[in-house]
Length: 404
Image 1 (cartoon, rainbow, N blue to C red):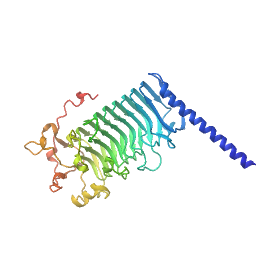
Image 2: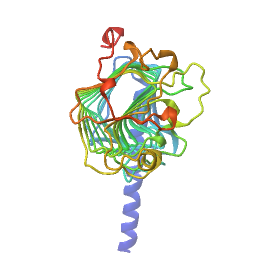
Image 3: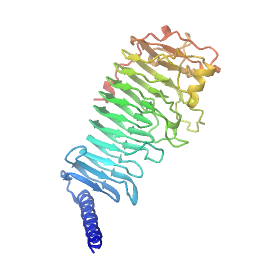
Image 4: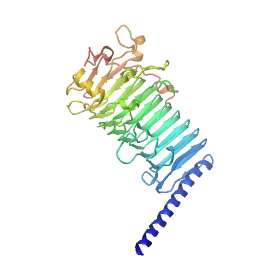
């Protein structure tokens, strides 16, 4: 009889718990829908199970505020409908702060078509072992204007932990990304500054990409400085077919087919394959159908960074590992800075290099080593001489072009 009573007691308590959780979920979604412009939506302390995506649309000047990272936790582990954890669309001046969001089916927090979006002291994570079934993005503002990500944490994304895509006027600072495929990624975005962050134990630490077939065709004017980019040697767990599935394990910074990128005063430590890679889209071996797409990196400046790595061969995983070992035969003498050397012929001057406005410039880095791997000619004329790239690219008006 006593066992029966205990079973009934447990079932009653569980039912009461589920009822309370459902009530909290309903209150949060109701507040998102009914809050007046200028309101603060407070979410109390606790670990709350959420069964469906939470959404906010068409609002202005709203703050969504928890009681702190790991104090207010919204868990979507048993999500029954929707893909995102929180989705914010067609809004202006939205702030999310002081909460943790976990384990959604798709992206954890997505903001789209938002003018003025701030993530402050937000943790977005997939708990457990990182896997390709995790959602693509932890923090995911896309096609937004005026993005600030400050003091956030991103863990376990099968694409990028902190991702800003097809947006402009962006600041990512004081944040940490680990156990993602890409720690921090700026993609097809304009006027971004990424600083005072830690990207560690990802496949790739910080990526600055331009990709074809997107609404915003070209990004650029990106500054990456004063970051700790270390030990990004995590196995790539992106789903097959994703562009980041091609990022080699052991990548510190990767610049792909974008322009006006300034990488300086970062600590780039113990990334086993490359400290910084500068590559064209041709290295992906994907077909280019977008006639408006520019596949070449131009106007890149890499200076005053600190490089450090153990003297060892690169991992054999992926194309770069095999390329380094068997084609380039770097052995243990692996360069920190790798440039594919593929040039846009329309921009090459009489020197065989880009003119001053589009130069690839590499200078004053601590323990700098370099290789132009001559990918355009099947890697036949690899050069370790960085002296041709000891220059200053013309970067005037970077800040005046709208970046603040």
